[in-house]
Image 1 (spheres, rainbow, N blue to C red):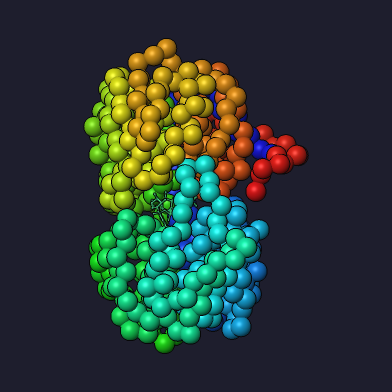
Image 2 (cartoon, rainbow, N blue to C red):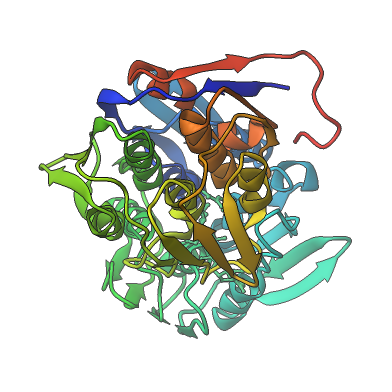
Length: 426
Ligand SMILES: CC(=O)N[C@H]1[C@@H](OP(=O)(O)OP(=O)(O)OC[C@H]2O[C@@H](n3ccc(=O)[nH]c3=O)[C@H](O)[C@@H]2O)O[C@H](CO)[C@@H](O)[C@@H]1O
Ligand SMILES: C=C(OP(=O)(O)O)C(=O)O
């Protein structure tokens, strides 16, 4: 099992590029199940979650390979409709094959994704969506079984904003007969990117990026040709890495508009931010001031940047209140930040971070989930001495060579590779 070793104290300086978005690529790769033929995608990041998706797609009868810059998915008719436990347990996003399989084959048998370290993550809204589109749903042996001769368009009103639920609804409704209206839809850029990909395949979708989306079902779709958007969460993490070290970092090949809530918070915290067409620069001006954040659906502050922002707040002057508004248990990084010397009091969905303390000092810490891992790496960049972040397989799910990108900006960071996987490593 790999770990990351960081020796803190270096200011980061320079330019680094954003990779393709994990959370856009995952649903888009599953959307390829909606049409036979050769689908071509660009800007698909090299990540463990992408490998897991590849395995799941292959178990469903598709074949995947990279051809230079392109990621190819070949789908032939008559594929399988069973998403096995071993595939889905590795990655929550496995549930995103439910809509495409059901719409395409009239039947889907998908393993229930397990809970994970950020909360229970139910799939009731995904299931209710398929019911609304006319599917008959049952469960057996840890699998959800959905059947429908052909899905029929209907009204879907989400009681809470769900990114994955909206994505499954979009994919299923694209091949349903008639019109589907999705209300209280997620507006995240990744949902918009999926909708653009589906429209390119021939889907008829309106209202993309608003909370009411209308889908006019079509008989069939064509293979996709689509370039995945840049990863706003990776870009945000890199900006926060620049900020926490008091550095001067430009993150390019990103879409600044997708990072507005972070940019606003960094400005409030006293950083100088320059925004160009496809790049953002963060510069330390004065010391970092404490800011409060509350995570919310887009365009609110993303839950996927909460842990990294909290690492920055350990360096701020004053007290910051961090409220997690999306997941009920996304403070697993707190106890590890405290091991590094942070002064944080976690309460239910709220954490109070007191930034004026003696500074962080290196320690052995354990990553508990993807963004928690990133926050520990960021904290390690300013901790005195050496920090070892173990269980780095969480990080590899969603960051492409994070340690190399940070090293290119001047961080003293390396990956330590060890032979034996831990028993709970996926
Ligand atoms: C692969 C991917 O894109 N993952 C992202 C996606 O996850 P994901 O799509 O799983 O997250 P959702 O937007 O669905 O979750 C939002 C809230 O709705 C709840 N909920 C969701 C579905 C459901 O059937 N029932 C239910 O109660 C969740 O527990 C959570 O409290 O959006 C999250 C919120 O921006 C991000 O943190 C994840 O990085
Ligand atoms: C929680 C995340 O991903 P997933 O939904 O795939 O677990 C994330 O990207 O931060």
